[in-house]
Amino acid sequence: MENNNTAQTILNVAQDIVRNRGYSAFSYADIAKQVGIRKASIHYHFPGKEDLVKKLVEQYREGMAKACDRIARSNAKPQDQLLAFANLYRNGLAEHKICLCAMLAADFAVLPDSIQAEIRVFFQDTATWLASLLQTGCDAKVWDCSTTVEQDAQGLIAMLQGAQLLSRSAINGDAIFEQMVYPLLQAKFAQV
Amino acid sequence: MENNNTAQTILNVAQDIVRNRGYSAFSYADIAKQVGIRKASIHYHFPGKEDLVKKLVEQYREGMAKACDRIARSNAKPQDQLLAFANLYRNGLAEHKICLCAMLAADFAVLPDSIQAEIRVFFQDTATWLASLLQTGCDAKVWDCSTTVEQDAQGLIAMLQGAQLLSRSAINGDAIFEQMVYPLLQAKFAQV
DNA sequence: TGACATCTACCTACTAATTGGTAGACAATG
DNA sequence: CATTGTCTACCAATTAGTAGGTAGATGTCA
Image 1 (cartoon, chains in turn cyan, green, orange, purple):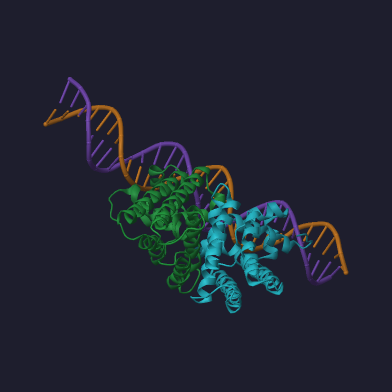
Image 2 (cartoon, helix red, strand yellow):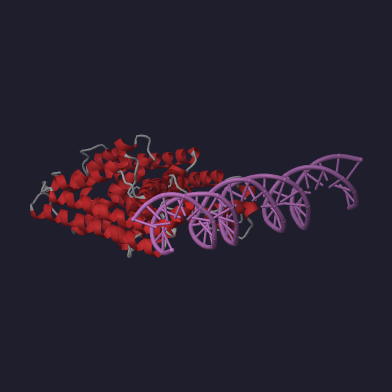
C-alpha cells in the first residue's frame, strides 16, 4: 500500500479511521497526526470533510467492483465464487476493518446528501453483482431459486454486514464470523 | 410512553438520538433542547456521558428481555415465535429506529469499556434466548438442526441487524427489510 | 405553630479542549 | 517568476463538564 502521493495517503488513513470509528468520530486532527502533516495541508487537498469522504466512498466502490470482477473472471464454480465473495468480508474483519459503507450506513442520518447517494449506489451495485452470481448458480442447477435472486442477494449482504458488526463486539470476533455466516450460506445454498 | 420524571425523559430522548445518529453524534446540547431543560441539569441526573449511555443500554436490555419473554409466554408455535422475534426489528424500523446496540456496535471502537461490556451482554442474552427457541423448534421437528442452534441464532441476529442498517440507506426501506429477511428465514426454517 | 435546616431540581455563567475551516507567509521547483 | 505544497497562526462554533446560586418542597425540633 505504498505511495508517494499525499492525497492518497490522506485517503488511506481516513479510510482506516472511518472503518474503525465511524464518520462522526473522525477528525482532520486525527488524520494530520497519522499522515505527519498539518491540519491545514489536508484542506489543501480536500477543501472540506464532505469532499474527502465522498472521494473515500467513490474509491471504495471502485475497489469493491474490481474485487468482484476478479471473482467473476476466475471462472470458478458458482459456489466457490459465493464463498470468495463472503471471504471479502471475513478478510476485512481479520484486519479489524468493517466495510466502509456499513459504517457509513450506521451514520447515515448525519451524512451530507451527496454521500448518502454514494452509499446507495454502492449497495445497489453490490447487490446487482451478487444477484447475477446467484442467477448463474440457479441456471447451472447448483442451487435452486424459489424466491427472486435480488432479494436473496440483499439478504446475504445484510447478513455479511451484520456479522461484521456483531463479530467486533464479541470476544472471539473472527471465529464468531465464520460460525455465523457459513451455516446460513449452507442452508440457503445447500451445495456450497 | 408518558412520564413526569425528568431522568426518564432524558433517557428516552437520548435513546432516540443514539438510535438515529449513533454515539459520537449526540450531545448534551441536543438532549437539553429536546427535553426543554438546560445542559447543566442533565449533569445533575447523569454526571457524565458514560453514566447516561450505560443506563441507556441497561434499560434497553431489560426492554428486549421483556419483549422476548412476552413472545415465549405466548405459547405460539415455534415458527410464529420466530416470526414475532423478527418483527421486533421490523417494527423498530417502521419508526425509523435501528436497534440501539447495533448502532453502538458500529461505534464500538470509541466506547468506554463499561459500555462495551454492556453491549456484549445484550448480544449474548439475545443469542441465548433465540438459540433456546430454535432448539424448541428442533425438538418439535418444526425444522431441522444440522448445525448448532447457537450458531444459527447468531447468524439470524446478524442478518436482522444488517437488514436494519441496509434498509435505512435504501429508498424504500421498510419494504426492502421484509424482502431481505423473510426469504432467508424461509430457506433456513422451511416451514415458517 | 413558627423557625431553621436540608434537600431536590433546576438555573446562569463559566472553563479548557476540540471541531472544521481560513488567511497569509514561505520554501522549493520548474 | 509562477505554481505547488506545506507551514504558522488564527477563527467562530461546539464539546463535555464545573462552580455556584436559587426557588420551593420537606423535614425537624422548641
